[in-house]
Amino acid sequence: MARFLGVVAGGFPPLFCLARSVRLSFLANISLIAIKGRIVKKYFLMLEFGQRRPEVRAIFMGTPEFAIPCLEHLMLGRYEGIAVYTQPDKLGGRGRSPISSPVKKAAETLKLPVVQPVSLKSADVVKQLAGFHPDVIVVAAFGQILPQSVLDIPRYGCINVHFSLLPRFRGASPVASSILAGDAFTGVSIMLMDRGLDTGPVLVRAAIPISAWDTTGSLTSKLSQVAARLLQELLARWLRGEITPQAQNEAEATLSNTISKEEGEIDWQLPAVDLWRRVRAFHPWPGCYTRWQGKQLKIIGAVPRPDTGTLEVGQVVALEKDGAAFGVCTGDGTLGVSKVQLEGKRAMSADDFLRGQRQFIGVILPSG
Image (tube, rainbow, N blue to C red; front, side, top):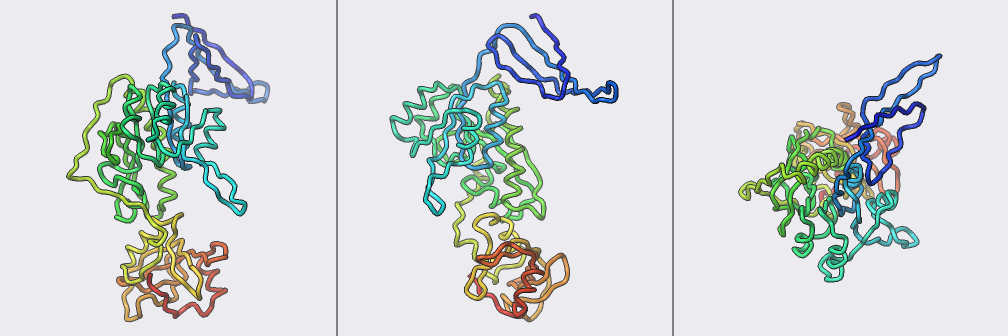
């Protein structure tokens, strides 16, 4: 095999060209040299001329924002993206106009064909999918159960990215469930899909710690980046036959149910630690809230305190510690509050809220 090493100098990044008989790989080492007081970037490109490797035809299925890194990393690999499946557009806004999913927008930016089936159980939908002749299907929070007729299509199977350390927290809300449970760690599991709900054999797992300040939003963002890198590494090894799927231990399996909007309403009878976890787990949706003067008051930032006293559950007290301007007495301890949002207003610090609601200290908030 003949090889050619080329050097490109200038301020522009190297262009990645796809050719049937040429494979380009960008060497990560970038050197900077000074010539007559000017900094010139030197990019090294390695062109390897030889027989073209067969492309792996991949279909991606996903819908929310956090699935996008997996799609992008999939396209960075040596895979031919032949289609992206995502949920149908939803009507929203004042004009009730169609709103595309984040994955659809990303796919259109990448110039990939987009398919939005109402259901994958339709014979016509299955026939269309089979017509793409995918070698592998990668799924990341698609939002639909894949029937056996779809699972049987790709020769390398359907690979699902799940945000928990399976078999713990199968189901719809694994990230929030990890926070609610007070887990010290969570992670990403990539499995070979079967007909069950997140029950397939696991190909790889990666764990990360949960910080005291993580919310479902921040933790999901971290996991999406871990998942993207893990997927890229896993797929190459899976396609080479280097990985043996490991069956999940059913005795250790737990389920995470879909979270409803009503679960966000605060019951002050609960311990402060539980409410603190709920504030984090239910951010950004559905939010953790109580009511004040007929309006919803969201608790966005909070910290549990072991304070005990004879005050009534739900009573608001002034605080000056841990960044919390006020606290609310709970069934066990006090929930210090640092950030809130009153219905119809912007989010603000608890200090700013108290400046406009001076009569707030001492009131008793209702329990949901």
